[in-house]
Amino acid sequence: MSLWHVAWNYLWNRKLTTAMTIISVALGVALISAVLTLREQTQKRFEEEGQAFDLVIGAKGNPLQLVLSTVYFLDAPTGNMSRADFEEIAKLEDVEAAFPLGMGDTFKGYRIVGTDRALMDFTWGDRRPYELEEGRYFEGVREAVIGAAVAQDTGLRVGSSFISTHGFVDMPGAHAHEDKPYTVVGVMRRSGTPNDRAIFCDMESVWDAHDHGGEEAEEHAHEHGEECDHDHEGVRADITAALVKLASPALRFEYKDRINKQYNAMAAVPVNEIQKLYEQLLGTAKAVLLAIGYLVVVISSMSILIGLYMSILQRRRDLAVMRALGATRGEIFGAVLIEAFWVTVLGIGVGWILGAVVCYGLGMYLVAKLGFHVSAVALGPDLVTAYSAVLLMGLVAGILPAWQAYRTDIARDLAEL
Image (cartoon, helix red, strand yellow):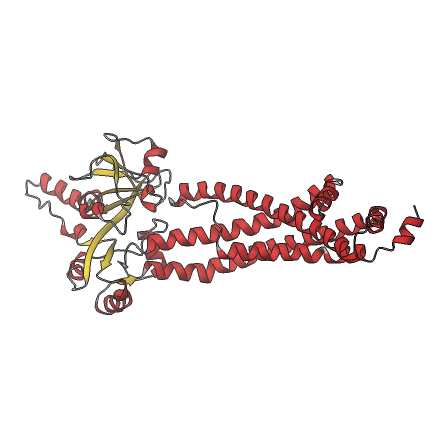
């Protein structure tokens, strides 16, 4: 029988102690796995979406807020920018595409985004984030195309009507545009992007919903028998933000500086702002959680050490018999280290499974809240390094018990029996 089989059999002769030690290692590994996997996957997904457009442009303010509100639909916009500025920027030499965005209303917490019909045809790489599952794209005023998550959660389908409410938070008593209902004309295919949580329509629909001044003017004109100009430029002179695609990503910072200096607007590079967010804020949270995970593993290593040490004291007769039958001190030392190896590897395996379950559950939450699909199983360099560190700690914990076994006195231990 090989040393590996001997070590395995000894482990399961004390099932409860072995199982509890494996679980303690697994808890630390699960925390480490979940933190590293979610951090890597969410950053990857945020940066993938941030790469779609080279610049986002909006009112001056916080650039991160601008990016979160326009690309990920997670924050309130920084304000409005001039449509004239947008049209001028769209004509700049290296601007391949520029899409205006108009926001201000929601339906059951899902953001209504006014834009150009051309945005629906936008692709990058092999991805089509606005691809339809059924129906068609919007063509007229108050026609809407809804994301897959919106359709799933609200029950809206092609042909359904809904009424928008003012603001970005679904609150009781919020002003509803009851006289201007939207009609769903299309449902987008699930893309695993923030678009799954958005409702798209043309810019005219957004302007029309907020053209309160125009309504008052029309009523006034009707009362006095006057004609009313329906092209209410006061409302239509602004947009919320714009998404810009440049001829080359290398031009991002040049155009960012140019726009910030020459226009009454602010430009931000989405992927750059997201990287800053992860480095400055989420990097600290990751470090804290990883420290807790490694602390749990260190405590687990102490459990391995104590468990094996007590086992050696209880197995002095067995070890003495093995020595008497010809086993060398080195083989005894190796057998105990193999026990530590088995416990640690099993703990890593169980912890990896637990971590994947946690990532799956949190991934479902992220799909619901952000529209991001993240993989629950991902084996990156950081995880390999972490698992190697855990394995090393487990083996180190087995050295003292192995040394105790190595020093077995055959004559004394056999004489005591």
